[in-house]
Length: 179
Image 1 (cartoon, rainbow, N blue to C red):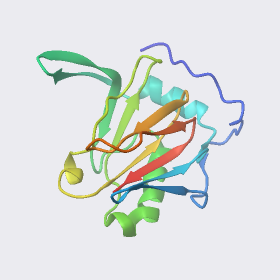
Image 2 (image 1 turned 30 degrees about the horizontal axis):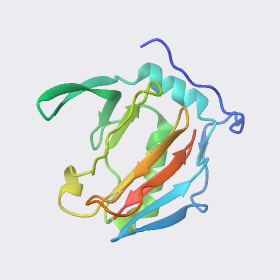
Image 3 (image 1 turned 90 degrees about the vertical axis):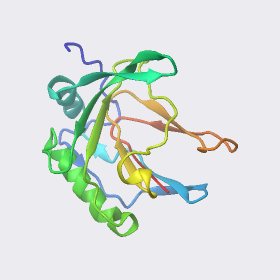
């Protein structure tokens, strides 16, 4: 993997890579107990982090069975199991901070981390529900810290009906989904 395409942010000119306060989180109730918390710009100075992750994480290309075909997953993936060191100290700090903030609501700390590398505008993720691990048996939370080019995150009710929710995620933005 040689090319890492990131146009630096005009608004994120911080030299120091750091997490901000979670005081600005804004919750949106989605119905049936589901919600999202959004905090733009939680991570500042993220250009260097993006470049390091793109270059150094052991990204994997995966394939999935879809109907009668096996297709390439349109993004690169890396998974860090509970107890595994994360590829950058700020990611461990983010996990600790989110665990402390959401611990009462979640009932346990965040323990694993999955990284997705969307290489260009063609990479994507299909509609899905997180039904692995704890999410297979009970409500859970997923936290996303976005670095790199802005992307829209689309959410819709699992069983149809309702409105699709579109949240633009920019460089350094945090979104936490629960319920």
